[in-house]
Amino acid sequence: MRTPQAPSGADPTRKPNPDPHPHPHPHPHPTRKPTLAPPNPPTPPTLRQLHRTATVVIVGSVMSVLDMTIVNVALHRLSEAFHSSLETIQWAASAYSLALAAVIPTAAWAMGRIGAKRTYLTALTLFTLGSLLAACAWDAGSLIAFRAVQGLGGGLLMPVGMAMVMRAADPARLGRVMALLGLPIVVGPVLGPVLGGWLIDAASWQWIFLVNLPVGAAALLLAAKLLHPDGPHDGAATTPGPHVPGPDVSRADAPRLDVPRPGTPRPDIPGPDVPRPGTPRPDIPRPDVPRPGTPRPDIPRLDVPGLLMLSPGLALLLFGLARGGEHGSFASPDALLPTLAGLVLIAAFARRALTTREPLLDLRLLRERPFGVGIGTLALFTCGYFGSMLLAPMYWQQARGLSATAAGLLGAPVGLAVGLTMQIASRRIDKVPPRRLIRTGIALGALGMALTALQVGSPDVAAWRVVGASVVMGVGTGMVLLPTMTTASRGLPKQRMTAASTILSINSQIWASIGTALISVTLGATGLTPTGFRTTYALAATLLALSLLPATFLPHRSPSRAPR
Image 1 (cartoon, rainbow, N blue to C red):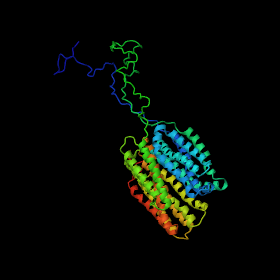
Image 2 (cartoon, one colour; image 1 turned 180 degrees about the vertical axis):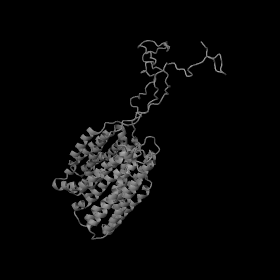
Image 3 (cartoon, rainbow, N blue to C red; image 1 turned 30 degrees about the horizontal axis):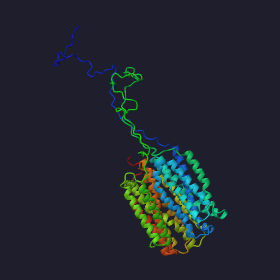
Image 4 (cartoon, one colour; image 1 turned 90 degrees about the vertical axis):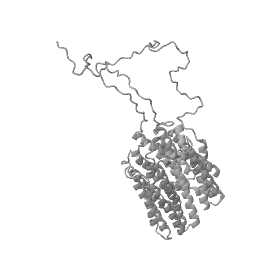
């Protein structure tokens, strides 16, 4: 037998190795590197759960919007029923608005503390209970107090409901879902005045509040059954430790682990140092169990100083603006002092929110360009549009001598135009560039408001011409409000949607009140004449047109083409 020769240049004394990569096992396999386990994200809500949440929120929003429109129609009848002045009864509406403004800042904290479902159920309970108590009011003071209870519930309904829907919807579907939330805007302004007038004439003033009870009971049952149970910070992702795979025990040739029986000493671990029972083991990490009374890090703490600044600041600001609108001037102390105090408190809160670690409301969201630009656009547009809503009823009744019912019917086409356009535009915002759609809506809204100003300036103008110009304004409004909210919040993480919805609600409340005060002061200075209405409508058109400036910086790409 011939002995194999070593190749030339090789060491003749070295033994040949047939396997240059020896492996301890007969069937070698590539060594697997330790990998990090992917984080376990929360299970995304299903489409069915999204529809359930939207249904509950729509029912609650319809109840809230109907209540506001019905009560505004019934203020004169309430003044007669309680033998009080109209200025005193007006506090029934003011108390609702002030309580609403005071409680909105707590929405984000309440959802983080007890969960969105419990917060929404609490809001529905407060609103329904306040409606029952208001129906049982025995004088003007008790009515004002019970309307404040309603406001505490109503202030939480919109931001909490919007936050639940925004967190349940994926970004590609957000516009269509926001269109569903716009349904109460279609129903409320059209049905509210008609229903309120009918209840006042056919029944009694108590029924303007009792009508909320069956709707509130239905909303409570639907919310308890359909809303997904959640808790504090539901949906927050956890970061697990690294995952290091063990031996492949499914292989027949894999080494078996010698697992000793309980109580058997391990030969590879020295065992003379046996701790006594109850002695902490130094080699075993102890869980960090907080002591009783220690605040848990996963539950947000209430920013009490921030709450004491923002809630009274909003209430004082809205109160001062309302008083200035009533007097037609902000020079009186009861209008100027509350307005200045409110502005100082809000400015102090803003400074604290940008410097403290856990603020009541995360104003750092305004640094996100789409959200900050959207807030600026909505501020100016809301100021002009919602401020002008008091002009049409006053024009038809004061300048044209029509009844309240006729004025409500003439305003119905505008509400329908806003609502129907909002349904279309909110769905299109998922597919078209936001800047193009929203700027077109702003231009239409400003054009319609300017045309309305030209029409009302003529004493004997035909009613259809005024309504037609207002419908153009309504079409533009439907293209702006919800599409801008959708664009502002689309790119935000789910855990920041709560703060975003709260900021959007506060923004609407503040600028709608500012617009109402500006329009009231201007109309009071110019008079209830065709010329006065023309000047006031022109001011509203200017405010709408100014919102084109921040809208220029909205995203110019459609959501489907935007970089992920």
